[in-house]
Length: 178
Image (tube, rainbow, N blue to C red; front, side, top):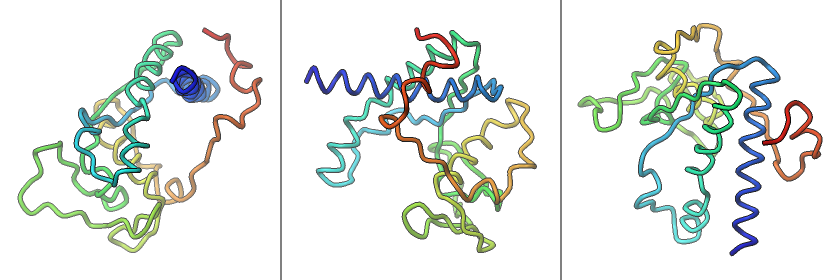
């Protein structure tokens, strides 16, 4: 288990550094993180998927991200993410808080297959980006962010990052290691 723990810690550190380095490179001053307390409790995705998902230390990633954000002066805004995957960002669906869903609430769009979301007007966008935009929408007013420029084009293609395939210089070139 020592080897596994070291690998997990390495992955957490690389992911957090990658996020913070990206923010420093592009002048991003706020990170918005969707978080639901107890979201791993009573998960039911099948025995093997449960074992894989529950072992991922997302709380440690959140803590490490908080540490790095404090060091570099980046604001980390943590918000609950209820109904962000079901609601359509493009259609402006209301996003109630967890446990406060109004009677008869129905999302205008739906997830059609893995990775794709179809909005009420028929637009097909990446499901993860739709959820991310909805998480951002939940805190946009509080942070004073104008989301008018975030349209369908921003929600179609997602960049994939492979942590263990990155060259070493990418992780440490822009700022000193902690």
